Structures are given as C-alpha cells and as structure tokens.
Image 1 (cartoon, rainbow, N blue to C red):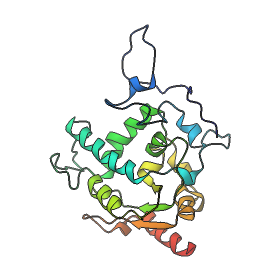
Image 2: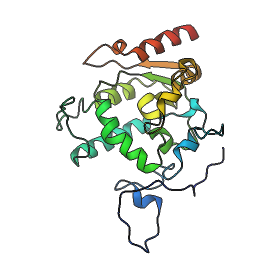
Image 3: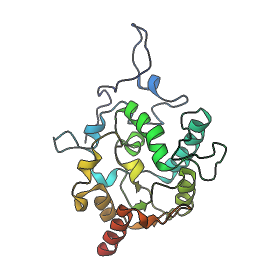
Image 4: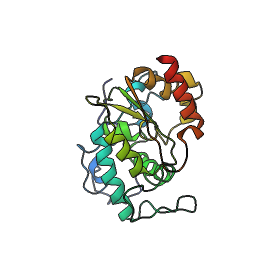
Length: 227
C-alpha cells in the first residue's frame, strides 16, 4: 500500500495564526517528531481499510513492538504528571504509583482516544508503524489491569526473537467503528491476528480473572482450536 504523507491532516484544537503553515510536528505532544509517530496526519480510516475501498494495512499487521511498550510506559508517566490522565470515580488510581497505574479503560478514554483522534484516528500501533508490523505474538488482557502492570508483564515475558504483538487497546482504532470490526468474531482483528501469531501471551492482573472478560474466553478457545 502506498502511503500518502500529504494526506489531509486531522482537525486540531490548537489555535493557529492566520499565516502559520501547518506541519505535523506542530500538533504532536511536546518532544515528539515524525520519527516518534510516522503515521501522524494520515487518514486512520484509509490505514485500517475502513473506507469501503477494500485497501489498507492488513489486519494482522496492526501491531506494536517490545520497544513501543517501553516507550509507551514513559509517555503514560508523563501524561499522569501533566494531569492529562486523572483518577476517576471508577478508577481512583494513585498518581504517584508507577507499579500498577491507571487501568486500560481510563487510559483509553483520557489518553489513547484523544491522542489518536488528533493524529488521524488510526490505532496507536499504526500511528507508530503506518507501514504495518506483522503479528507474531498475540497478547490477551482484561482491560481492568493497570497499564504499568500490563506493560511490565508483557515486556518481561516477551518471546525471544519476536517482533510484533497484537494488543487490542493499541492495535484497534479506538476512534473508529470497532463494533463493525468485531461483528463477525471469526473475521475480527482478534481472530486474524491469532491466526498469524506463533505465540500467545496471557497477561493476568491483580484485580480479577482475565477470563471474566468474554473476549478473553473466546480468544483462548479460538487459540486452542487453531493449535
């Protein structure tokens, strides 16, 4: 797929002077540039093949690397320190705690959705890898876990020699029509990436059984049927 670096930029809430030229880096978080997020400014629907034209990055390449997770951990810490991610009634996490952190629901609402919407509404994974990164690890998780808890377990358990991992919160476009993507479970990103992966990594958490989440049960069943 040929990627258009001149694709229409997403709307931004940042005021701009009348004669100020737009550049992708001007919209990014402080300290980022195009090497941080090469997909910034591209059309998320096109990248994910959700325009009805039948093209886009293959689903089994919506993945992140181990290094991406390490980078993300540092970025989440910065976002908490800046007050961009805050405790809620449902997730009253300790802002000084760097062992567990906010849960995935909080991070999705307060970090991933706002950030990737500004970038072009692609997934965090394709914001980092707009050419795609082939899936060889499937990581299943419950969403109720703290993000630091998740990242540390995933990084420390990463299979040797493997490059790309599917993680639903990072791999699926959180601002697009995910319901349409999972309408037929066997054709969903979960199933496509499980089919591609050579390894499945199950990340437990301190709060609840991962198999209290129906999708995790389905993923385990599907993986067993795939051998």
